[in-house]
Image (cartoon, rainbow over all chains, first blue to last red; front, side):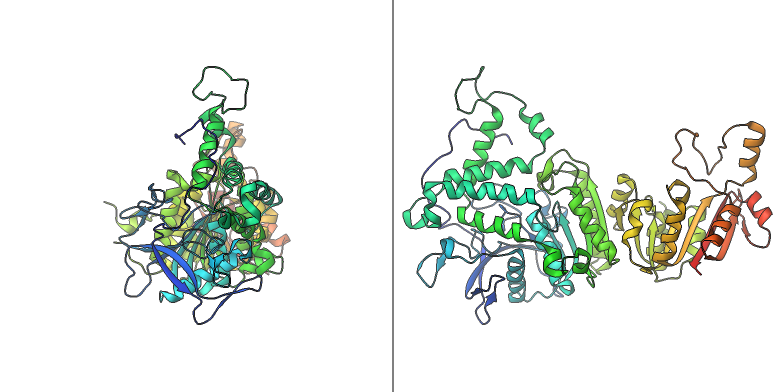
Amino acid sequence: MNEQTGGQIDEGGAPLLSDQDVGKQVTLGVDDPLRLDCGVELTNFSVAYQSYGELNAAKTNVILICHALSGDQFVSGVNPVTCKEGWWDLVIGPNKLIDTDRFFVICPNILGGCMGTIGPKEINPATGKPWGLDFPVITVSDMVRAQALLLDHLGIEKIFCALGGSMGGMQVLEWAVAYPERVFAAVPIATAPHHSAQNIAFHETGRQAIMADPDWHGGDYLSYDSRPHRGLAIARMVAHITYLSEPALQNKFGRQLQDRDAISFGFDADFQVESYLRHQGSTFVDRFDANSYLYITRAMDYFDLAERHGGGVLAEAFRGVDTRFCVISFTSDWLYQTAESRAIVKALNAVAANVSFAEIKSDKGHDAFLLEEPEFWKVLSGFIEGAAERYGLVSQ
Amino acid sequence: MMTDAQKRAIRIDLQLIAEMVEPGSRLLDVGCGDGALLDYLHHDKQVDGRGIELSAEGVNACVSAGLSVIQGDADQDLDDYPDQAFDYVVLGQTLQATHEPHNVLANLVRIGKRAVLSFPNFGYWRVRTRLLFGGKMPRTNSLSYDWYDTPNIHFCTIRDFVDLCDQMGITIERGIALDHNGGELRIGSSMRFANLIGEQAVFLLRKS
């Protein structure tokens, strides 16, 4: 949170994500198409993923990481696109909490994403042009089914542990409920069983900002060689506020001014917090596709585990699931509040499922799951060790 | 270095509870604290255990030790569980700290095929004499709080508890009073004596 800029959000079209190194990539849906919830069938589509560590002979040491809205497959080491550390490098790597000397860690880029997996910026084979808004609307279930196809392709039957925060947590829940026999342990972090009205409202604000940008061109901006950078940046700024807690923002910025001694009586970034948000917005547009943002936020809004799998009753969705769960929330997360995690726990209890639940004290808001939180890491590490022992993975 | 067995040495009432539990069974420990009983039962009796604990410190310690424990409350959260979900539901030294002990007790025998619980006996002679001769609220080894800061809000004697079970149609399969030195005395044959020398009691219950 230290980099700041006093500048305006940049406009126009830096080359976006075309010749990037997206890591490993496979083509799926070759023999059988992936039938999406909306009814469209996807064939011969690409899925990009990263893996770390070695798959053991029995293929029992698989840890699946599901990334969040703005995440990608580069969880550990250096992300070749941003040239920064992977988004969970603090936790995943050799001799780290999730030890890649011991586990085979795999993280796929989600369906609808913009880092090598099929999404709206890829070429639609039917037209030879980017999909844009012709890309089918996808769901969290579709994302998970695509991931299951990836694991099939890699010959991996069972996941030892699936972990993810935020939308990653939604995928983890979907995995355990849709494929209970394939998931031994599941860690949904800072997430919810469905989107609340407030969650949808924030997403809609972001989408409207993108669509209101004249450079969006009805979603066809790639044909115009433009990018709706301003709209996407505003969407990111709004979303970023929801990832932080009020005390965290206050402590970090308060009313401090940016590179000036007095207010300017204008609309420049007088306050540090404005400058910070502008920076967050402008760095995001360099690495993220605006249409992907629309599709992924929509998938999150549509997510409703109870409705899809339990006839409206969350507990019914979990009936018969013998996965070991560890549900984790953070006290200052107001985007996916502890009450949401508790609803998951109550539903799991109602079918006497195997669940641990810890609410971690933190002032870092929703983003706490990405940051250094020793108590969170202790709980996570203990859960993984306990699960590994019960799965027959002996600690080295 | 402590041996594994020494590390897992547990409180005397928990030892007695553990003895009452069949190996390999499914068990819910309500108010599981730092998870000592669950850990012991997992390692020594291959019990598939779960826990509920009120304090965040306790929960985090349990989960960090690989135990399946949630943050929750005996008064609030037992309603969530289905009937007969566990072979045993354990409530160790917690009944007296609940708001509605009778509802908690009803939930224990509903959720578990058996309920095992321990509680401090307010009929213990040292408690009686401190109140009678000292004129002050009792403080003993097992009741080590001052009256104004105690979490224990619903004390009972062994006789009170047996009466409540009777009223609620709960069958007492075993009842044991533990004296100051951990000596065991079967409750039943000599209620008057057990209620006097028992510093705490352990019961194995089921719905009639």
